Amino acid sequence: MTDPTLPRANMPFAGIATFARAPYVPDLAALEADFAVYGFPFDAAVGFRPGQRLAPRAIREMSTRFGMDWGPQNPGYWDVETGRWYLRGARLVDVGDVDPLYFDLEHLDRSAQALVGGILRAGAIPVGLGGDHSVTFPILKAFAGHGEIDIVQIDAHLDFTDAICGFTRSNSSPIRRAAELPHVREVTVLGIRGLRTNPEAYEAARARGHRIVLQSEIRQKGIGAALDALPSGRRVYVTIDIDALDPSVAPGTSSPEFEGMSVTEVRAILREVARRNEVVGVDLVEVNPYLDVGGMTSLLAARLLVEFMGYIHGSRQG
Ligand SMILES: [Mn+2]
Image (cartoon, rainbow, N blue to C red):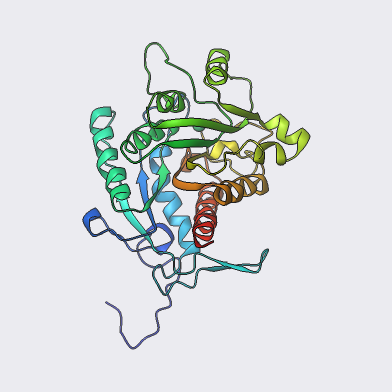
């Protein structure tokens, strides 16, 4: 209880850590929002170092730094670089988490379907906090019946491996599974690098017509190489694997790859994808708080999502 005559200080370290201090709205029937953030705390599909199940909480914690008054009175944030206000009047809510049951994928998929499907039916944009990258497939399954979508994937890895010893749901396979969904059209993947690219997956992605931009191309030709590959005028789902970024800025992830994207490059891609397209959903995956340094990776994840929502909201306002 607070004294109603006292002004509300709302310090980032006080109170319950919802995403960016948004109201917690677990009842999807009551959902009225532009953006609905949810957690997807699952990491049973990771091939190396686990811990991504704890990322939604870690990202929410750091996101309190970007707390604002989400509602019609929201002044938003002022961007010193452009002199513009973003997220003015934007309504953001935090709807809680998908409900995993150990490694029961049927339970997981049904829970994801209920949560993400409920957000879509309410007309809000789902903003997911992973989780390892396998969560993107059940999220995209929940988009069935909500129109065709293109995927923009920002990632060091293709995640297009068909199966590992017959197992088709690892965090190396989500885009392969998603590409089999009838409502998923074109895929653009930016930032590929490293020594472990699966040649079968690479050829299969090219054969399906994926636009693949290697990080080495961005290094050589500049960020235009990535921006030129982006779709235009489409309904786009954006999946951001934090390992797309260089491990010097995003160390808290399971499979870091050196020579990665800069924050500047990722921001430019997010700005452009929102400017050119209707963004219908986003997730940010593979943050691993156990491997993080001073919460930097979680802070960066929160920052990128707040800023991306600003670009999306700005492009909708015209
Ligand atoms: Mn990935």
